[in-house]
Image (tube, rainbow over all chains, first blue to last red):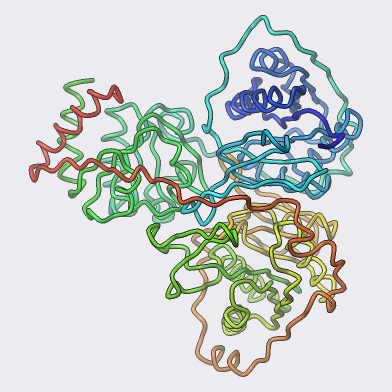
Length: 334
Length: 270
């Protein structure tokens, strides 16, 4: 439908490896590229990106571009956008450009879209090629997740989407897969940098990483106090299950636990096998962060709480009565 | 410092899921008429952020909104921001703005900002609670060629720059941006919108809010509304919310916990 060709992913590096969302994007991108009979490429911009090439190929990339000389050590949106703009100018306009719905993708994707005059849909849960038009169709939650919208793109431009974490497992890696790995100069100097970083404050989560944990136990403001959050959630149910600890925005604002534990629209997106929601109402802004969980268990005093609409199993009772006995029962079987 | 804050009117975001419906002819989300229309929550945080800067450094704040749903309702929202402490407000209202996406909306707002002329800082929420698009702040910045940061939770003004905090995936950055710039604001406990004082409410009541059309902001008609959009809603659906929660019905917490553990084991969830 256009002269634009191929699927390009803006990857992210975690340590010196492609991040988990980048591997998920490679799986999705491969399916789209195959449906179009086109190539799949990915670009990583990071000083430690050297080792990402072969991994990305084994997960489905045909071409990997590595940029290791960006003007800033940390991600900086404006200069990274300029690097990708330049790459696209040199290598050709992709038909589809994908990013992860991470804090990085949230700013980089719209910036690129407006520079490349591309249509963009953020936070997608599903992507497919329309068999009739060969255009991209994407599905995203709107109205805080109460409605799912399917979008199409105006013909002729780059079709851009950011994809929520955990909407699809990565493909099985194929170590023998062949692809091209190119180291590309950034071609952009510090004049492209717009934000000067004063200080980066990393707030490590306590316990297992909630974004990768198989089980997450989350508490809401209904827990009541920091002490109770620690006793029943962090050092209680989560410890027994070796689970990541999650919290609602309200629980973080109330000081029960630190920011990096927040799950929701402005926090982490998690997709564990089991998500146990304790004393939280299931506000749609929170559910935006955990609707990818395969099984949700809810414990809430109010049997009409919205969380039960999302839950597979529920106990409508005071969490303080349920959690201690639940911990005992779990210890017996784990 | 002269601030322009962009707000959007949305249906009350905590409306229960069961109230939502869709009209696939009009490609619109449908809600009962008694659901109130309010300022989108992150935009309220942006208004509060602007007022705090104004409190600290002086200057003015102009609030800008593009009419959706009912223009009269948006005028009420704009008056609310004046009651809270904003100095001026402008409504963009023209049938040509209808059916826009993030592209057309960003362009229209950017053209209105150009018409306002003088500004140091543009604020908006990170995303509106209706379409959750999350692009307009960055769109305005790119169209006007300004630096931008998001999702911003704290702002301190420092002569020709702002020092801000914004969220990253595992913490936050403290950073500086030169003025003028655009900041897309997230929620933070320091940005809970203030209650409008009574004198403010009385003042706002008497104010006439100017309305600008597409011609007033010298918009290119190819760039606005549905014509300027680069994406289109093809279909809307109400998602299945699991919807079939199986309750452990025992009154005895120990028995209920036992039943739950058995279910989780039987389904190989643990």
